[in-house]
Length: 145
Length: 145
Length: 145
Length: 145
Figure: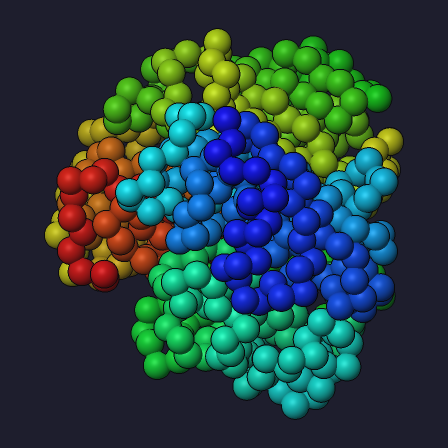
């Protein structure tokens, strides 16, 4: 089960990542191997065609997996992404984007998960990512083996 | 051969992408199926451990492929990324990052390429990405079949 | 909804793919955007350590997405994979492997889906893949937009 | 520099992998962080449209990276693939396929490389893959840091 709350994770995020000073992410909930993170809609994330930019969605995918991992192992700032694969599926609406991250594996050295992203109020995903995090040696994950 | 110069591509980039207002990217050169783009070092791109953040490198990978594609097909703002896969290989130095993008295929509908990223002055890459762009129907690429 | 049954899809598979003469795959069921395919356990698929080989799992991932796509668009043999990304998560048991394929997008030109693979009787996945198929121009998919 | 020859690597491969009894792969050469592997053309690898199947190319990508890794660290059969991402670029000719594998990183725990595949005699690649191998703890790689 999670060892940090959504509030603790969001506070941790903003205290450690200087390039997130616009606080565009909201950690909405965490559960066993799951995290839901919201990207607040902002003109800053638009690209030509009026759609949310690929980099904004990639940052959301990476951040939501980071939250899902830290929720289980605690505040290990030095967990780092080793691989991220993202498919962009549909043009996002001009709305918040909700990311649902789900751990597929939480091992001692690697955590792997998938993230599905939706424009708020829509059923079809706008993007889907798989993300691998490397966990520093001295942090033993709890659960999910 | 390229149909736009490095200067034209950089100007195009900043005129179309509002979230790049910090002008962190420099289009250094383009050639037949190749582009070199520099991410200027800035504290804003750091993450815990003092290293350049994953999202900053993903944005660099995506941007440098966009430049490599547009160099060949002209200023088609609506070319969109459909897939991006990135491997983070080493902790980047606190220095500019240079991306070398190379097209593997430039078809009518899809362009696929790979991007290798280096900290300035280093020989071993910090990250490597493969990126697929979807090209709108009415833009015929020149060359590379 | 599917336009082919599991039986029709399995028969189509074996009539079109000469390198599947060992008939190791069983199409177990198909539904709206979903397919379940079983890889029969056989010593032939083992690798050192007594585990099922990566290539056997990659073939299963590719095949189960092909079945999920064809179930919706009909017997289009020339649908081809353009991208496959697979994460190997755990050592598979010496048992059948069950693949659950799910379409994330079924467009006119591209279908994208994810595949989760389990050793029979186990809850934790052994592998997870995302797969993109390119659909020939004159075949209009039904449903899923 | 390599610690095994092409001949030793090919012999090792066939002695450890029972599903390669058709001996379709030839280890042509290895060098510092590089391997060249040939997939012999055989009707068995065809798919509809007369082209070499995706699974045959995925197996080639995986095998050629395995050879590139083992060439540097020695005969560690239990090195296992953790991630493979492949882009299929062009319809292969009815000819042998040559894979050029190149290590991007050879760490203590993970090796990452890229593989470009060509139909014999052609200049444009038919497929490109990035592959990550996990290396068992007690095998220290030599070189490439």
